[in-house]
Length: 406
Image 1 (cartoon, rainbow, N blue to C red):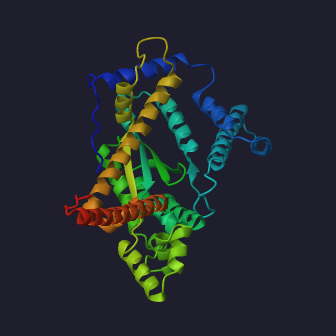
Image 2 (image 1 turned 180 degrees about the vertical axis):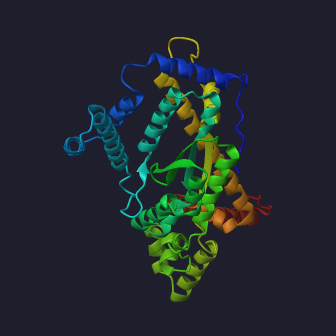
Image 3 (image 1 turned 45 degrees about the vertical axis):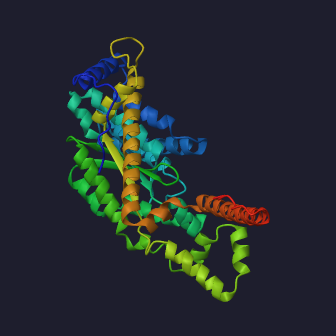
């Protein structure tokens, strides 16, 4: 469960209202003759990177504009009707191009595409700008939410398999996060929550949520739990790692060339025993899981104002900078909660399932360090034994009791 994050100094309850009022004021100061939707489309267009992609974007708009012009002439549209049709088409083409441009390349597949984090943060900024144009109150900040997920034990998973196999595992996990027919996404859709799932690099996934009704910490926790249950119960994900597979046992338990060389010198019976010992140290079965933590924008605003000297009444803050700080505050708070929840789950696992706990901790690097530590301990024990023997011989010669070197 998500934990309440305490802050060093509690500001008055109206601080959120003051931040929101200041944002509205700063937003009004940025108003120009250009409508917000046009400014947002211009911003999206500027983030469509690459000459080829930009040309394709402009070519598609030009092609669709010609089609609409021909249709307007055929059906005798007014100039206002044509202008509106072109604006709507331009917005649709730009939004589609922007959305498709910011898919994450490594984990996206044709069947399960997932966005890069840049797309979600951009939409967060744009949605917040549109909120300022509405007749909204500070309560509207609770309509936005951010959740961070972190895959558990991925380094140990990779040590058991390979980089390519790990990538395939993550791609299959993506399919759960983006599955429109999955139980969590159906719940979000039924509740009227617009959600954008993103890959944030490596073993991290992010969910940006925007709703017309307030999002509560309890609801965010419900979303986290729902995704966790989908992932942990997935037979497809579970099948990616079989601890009874001898290849997995060897890859996990013999991580270095020195381990493998020593193993090769053992007798067949010794090798069987060695593999049995490694298998007994592994969990009974592989259960895929993720840690999660989230926050609403209202919580992130309070978090940010406690940790930054916001110039709410002065002239040094701009709409863009204040918006960026409260969005980043929301992201930071979600990450803090995700890490706390991950640590709490690890502590529970230590008490309830020591082998799974060890598997999460003992990636290849840690196991190699442990191997070196064990070798040093063995060498130290041998030195102590030799020293004891020398001292014992000396004591016998002089008729005195040798000291205890342990």
